[in-house]
Image (cartoon, rainbow, N blue to C red; front, side):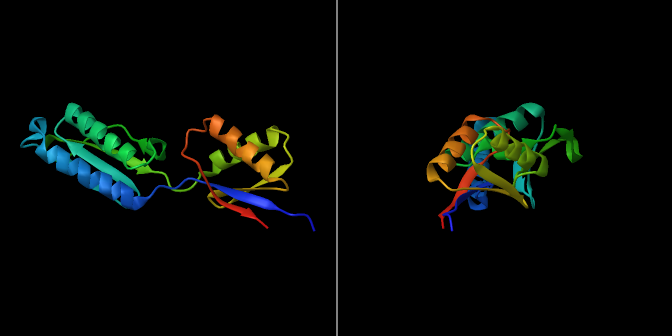
Length: 165
């Protein structure tokens, strides 16, 4: 039987690192002079971040601080999709940032189509929110990884579960 090698394409972020970045952001926001006495806050819901502040300027500034902290902690910014800011209670504004966990179905189909268009002898299969790529040769799998990294699909992708059977 021929040897099969495989790897998984996933889109995951470390929730603990997000919590750490949130705590650092809140600490800096509460210490900064331009946020003194403001009701600026960042919360972690089930799958969303909720940013709230008095006005759009403070909301943008707090978002910049949050993004700096996320990058320092190694959390990719592509894993977040932001809604527009909306008015909230008490004359404040609120913005939701959705945390992407797993590859959406349409993006997974796009990734599989891209892999098939490369004409390399590998198989790509969608397994829930993961895309598994299998092939005989490790070099071809590494070539596929390099091509996927070079193309921007608009989502965060990491390559895990690299196996040789």
